[in-house]
Image (cartoon, rainbow, N blue to C red; front, side, top):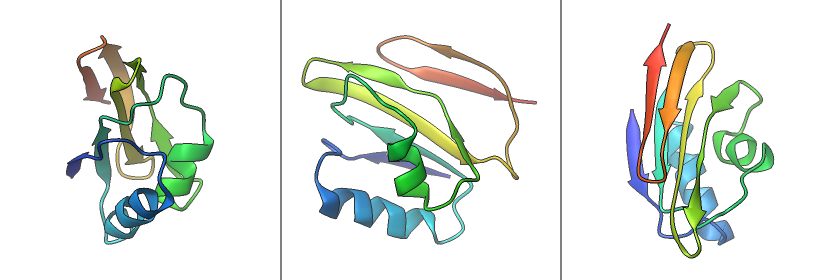
Length: 93
């Protein structure tokens, strides 16, 4: 499991750094402070490096916040999740 405050995910260097850590057998990761208001599938797929990723997100509020918990869908099965602007809770099935 990995939790990382990235302080903005727009830079390619930061995305590559996180991706390199996740490829070392991480099954669940939470990226904090993405500073993104809209998150679509390209970012988690790019960071994870494979299509086996599932994720949920909480958008930033302007230039502050933003969360993306993501996981290997072969290792973690989402039962439910609850999100606010400050946190995301995920429950495994």
